[in-house]
Amino acid sequence: MKILLSDLEKKYKNISGVLGSNFFNNYSVDWLDSIPSTMTIVDENIKKNIINKIIVANFQNKGQGRFGRHWESPLGKNLLLSVPIKLDSRKLNRIPVISTISVLNTIKFFLKRDEHIVIKWPNDILVNDKKISGIIIKTFSSQKYSVVNLGIGINVNTELSDYENFDFKATSLRIENDLVFDIYNVFYKLIISLSESLNSDYLDIFNHWKNNILIPQKNINIRNTETSKYISCKPIGVNSEGLLVVEKENGDHLALTSEEVTFHY
Image 1 (cartoon, one colour):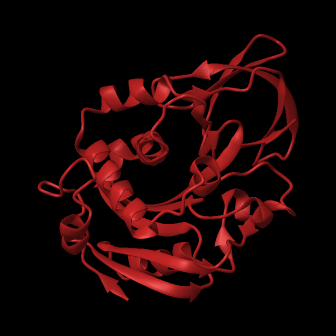
Image 2: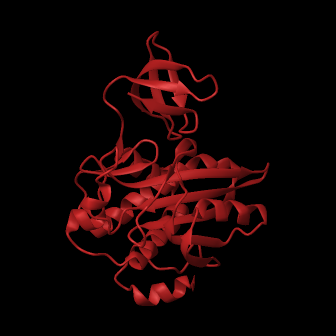
């Protein structure tokens, strides 16, 4: 099913922000029923130079996570999408900050509160220490510009029974507010938030992100994905590029991207 963003703008007048100078003005939306993965379709589209089509799915049975992890989402209950974004290669490092703060703002809008909603570095949104959203970023680069495949999942209408077999704590907009939400409404607000973040002064976005980032408070083992070796490090913050800064046992500091490390407590 094809969806026009302009039609959603007319329907959801309660959403703050307007399309106007929307970054996604020339994009189309394919809202599909059941597919293996939205990321896979956008990957293929980018290789064909189709970089103005958002893919949304009601269900995917091979959803992609970091480091090749796969997961499934209950049919029709959550927002699952991938968005291609073309940008100057010099601004590529801004996408993790822009994407997570956009999702954070969307979730806060529907929960109508700010407290206990944080970004867990690098790509998860937590509500009361439970995961409500995850983000994955894949990059196709050239010398002049890059195209990002931005995958986003937001738990919208899942119930507690949907998480009985999960090995981590999860929640949804429905669980937190005891309401059933219109997924199209959530999608439209997310696109508005992404567009506003992409068009805003990056320093303002970064400061907002930094004020909402959750850094582990205890020592963690970090695995270098190239050597597969674990080293014990103390997280001490994030730098101006959004990289995780850790201190090794010998006192040296490292700045790490999400692609370089995985957490092992």
